[in-house]
Image (cartoon, rainbow, N blue to C red; front, side, top):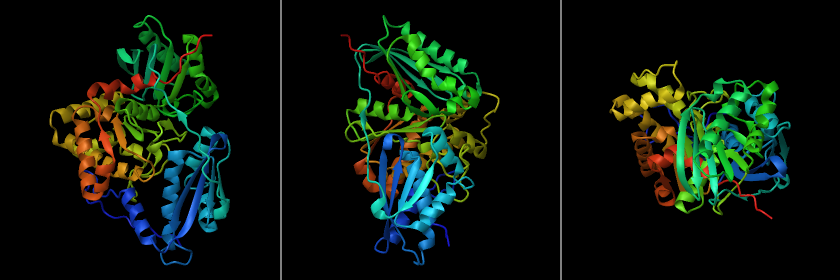
Amino acid sequence: MTTALSLPEPLIKPPLDPGFRPAVSATHAFHQKVSGEGVPLAMALEREDGQVSHFETSVFPEGHPLAGQNFPYVERLLKFLLWQRGAHTVYIGGNPRLAQQLANTYGTNGKRHFDAQFLGEKVYEQPFRVIACSLEEVPLDRETRKSLGRHLEGCRIGFDLGASDRKVSAVMNGVAVYSEEVIWEPRKHADPEYHYREILTALKTAASQMPRVDAIGGSAAGIYIHNRPRVASLFRSVPQERFGEIYTLFERLQKEMGVPLEVINDGDVTALAGSMSLGENAVLGIALGSSEAAGYVDAQGAITGWLNELAFAPIDYSPAAPYEEWSGDQGCGATYLSQQCVFRLAPQVGIDLPLNIPDAERLALAQKHLHEGHEGAVRIWQTMGVYLGYALAHYADFYEVKHVLILGRCTSGEGGNLLLEGVRTVWQAEFPHLLEQIQVHLPDEKIRRVGQSVAAASLPELMKED
């Protein structure tokens, strides 16, 4: 019989969300209870090209009075790992009953069917499977890592495609000589030619500011494999029968511009920007924009090939947590660490954000209230700061992190300082060891707004002449 997890109240409560129950607190409470009484459980998550992430934990043995908590703990754990690391096949070793429960949950009629279909069919283009096996049969780590960017020579263009705005920079030998930011709403446009024209216009505008173009690098929300968008919210209005034109979108742009072009997830570029600016590795980048984007540069300065789609990863286990619009799941990062959170909380504090204006303008209006000292607006960003503090503590259990870089439109102005203050308050109260282990960085205003497009410019290697 499944029973609910213990959900400890946080010591620091978000001002506008007293029901918040941090995932990190629930996980740590489970670990404490199972310590000394647990049995091993192993998972392996297999993704493209035979890559495997291996993860081990402990659960209560079958027949234990608290064994009913195993499934809710493991289900939330797997949900996090799927969106952190990616998988089309999951091996569960050590507990056939849990494996069957997870297979049902991620099956055709299961509660997590969205995740299974999204990852299996859309991202990795094969059926999603959960396989029960013995502990000894669970595949071991088989990860591949690759260096990321850091090529600064020559005349380069960097772009960053967000859901509310697109940014582009002209970069000469590592120095941005021109940057622009244009508000757009790509999610409302079904014609692939609209996206092609808009991005091409940005590239040609930047190109006009330099004597030549040697390479182009870009970041964009979504999942990109070999420069092809597999899933991206930017193109959600494009009908399936025309999505083939989106698959080849960046290949067409590369052909038009005639130089090397590389595009990757915007979160990975956030992490790259942090690593380059700090001269350090083990960097987790979090972009709080139209959604939550994340990326990771490991201790060796490489990317892992993980998805890092933390927008879908749960950080709140409250039964009353808000639902994420795509997956229909509760407590996912996107509804807490993005402009979606601002829009969700604004009515509670009497701030009217009209629905008939672009989302970027709605956020700007909320930020105007914040700049003017509106008490309700301050409480919105204080609430997000508490969310961020507990979320980063949760992420620290799954990543080796020395630095966290926070970027994105939600960090502009006074909002960024309130977010940092929230993190410090939470960590001082509940996770003091993290204050010594991890530095959280908020770049200056210029880097916050265009830093990703500048870092993106460093992605491609230049073509070498014979």
